[in-house]
Length: 284
Image 1 (spheres, one colour):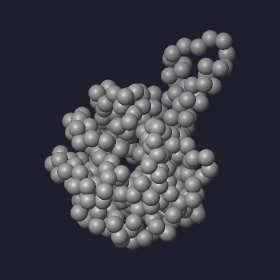
Image 2 (image 1 turned 90 degrees about the horizontal axis):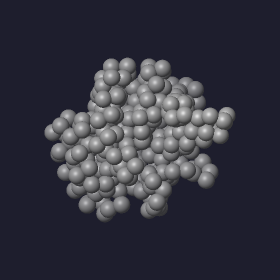
Image 3 (image 1 turned 180 degrees about the horizontal axis):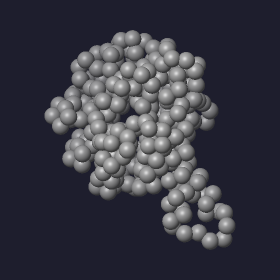
């Protein structure tokens, strides 16, 4: 149908009290699998890529492919730069036509975080793009190479942060972490509820892979509108590729490609269904 602004999809998710899935991709197969699931379920999604992935999946290759795929999809799709680390990368993503960007300044002091994000907001809004930012510390990292620890978002700080930066979506830390959880995390739903009470913009849950379906739905009932899924998709792609390569005697690239598409498709489809099912099976 169309490449759209992420803000549009999150507003619609808010009206329906549902979550919009934001699925990280790293190659053509993942793009195809994610869109196949979205089109089958007739549900808009967000395609995204984090800056730490660009060493393996260069932005100059992934960016145009993601944007073109969104334009040709049979559902509405936003294209988002996740966890941008530099202002220069944010600009490159906007130049490629991304409809949403995030500069992650969450490890910096509060005022410095605000100042850096305000600069991104000023630039992105001039191009009609949505801006996401993070306050508090989500554990782990997108590539698993570092861990700054977990520090829950302070609801009072969140209120100030949103007002001062002018962002469109706020990523919160409520005990969630990037990467593989050893066990399902205990999310601080009381903190999330208070942030939702104080902040009017959509909230974002990072580190979604490994959170239980019920906890996803409870978080969505308390204001989460964008839910990030990365590790679960990468794991699914790897698993399906391994299963294909260890089955039978003969293998070829094209069937391997199909296996990776299938892995992404199954994972994305499952999460879309979860994010669109009300908590407790009822509408709030």
